[in-house]
Length: 249
Image 1: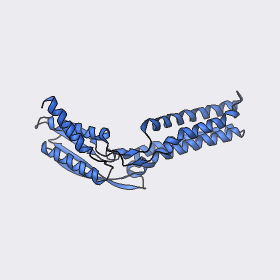
Image 2: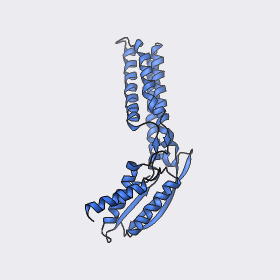
Image 3: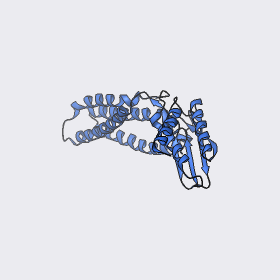
């Protein structure tokens, strides 16, 4: 296939896949998956759909809840230290941060599939030709969020920095090395402002997801169609990637 023809094919695939938002489990996502199945069957693939159960809660509410806990931790450390109890503030911060480390590790590994709330159903499309040892993978679902990514990332980074600043300031105060009590109010205000983008970030279904990830699916479909017909290869089109990588898991 010529470069021009390949470019036209990619553009056509992208336009078809990004026709509408494709939230996990929606009819629009199902239509996009059906389109992928037809394209793969044209290229000689045997397709099957694999259903799975998962929880939408981590993908929807995990980031704002984590930001809220981090904000509350900073505020409690600031208030306790300002009231003259920096050692108690440090003990509280250590307990919360250690608990968060264990919970977040477990949440990343188990919650997308095992969390008991906001249960939902998803479907992966698996296509194979021969006995593949190589798989091409892309997710077909999309989502939008109320806060742009740059602000969300900035919020997370700032909260982490301010958490470290709060702990260091409490250590300085506890050791009597400097008078930092007058700065606690300023730190609390900064933490509140830094947390706002994360707290206000809600999952929506307003994006057609051309870049994320219709472009990836189009690339996989186009690559699969260009491979020699006798070459074993597999294609996996996953769902609910935007909700904790549930389909990939």
